[in-house]
Length: 81
Image (cartoon, rainbow, N blue to C red):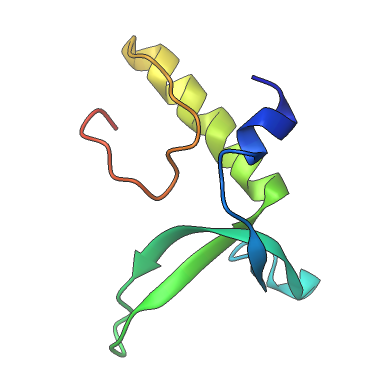
């Protein structure tokens, strides 16, 4: 898959990327919900650059384990990961 095909697998909305908060509000996608020590729930969002990097890391991990790589699964807890 090419870059745009991977990005098209996600739903995008304005938000702050967890790795690049200095960019301010940009197009982001939800990748995780965490429970901070202070209580409550916090959505973790990522920009396109970060999504592509995380997908690259997932693809490499899948190849090392000898399992199929299925893009578009960030934020989903897969039993194979």
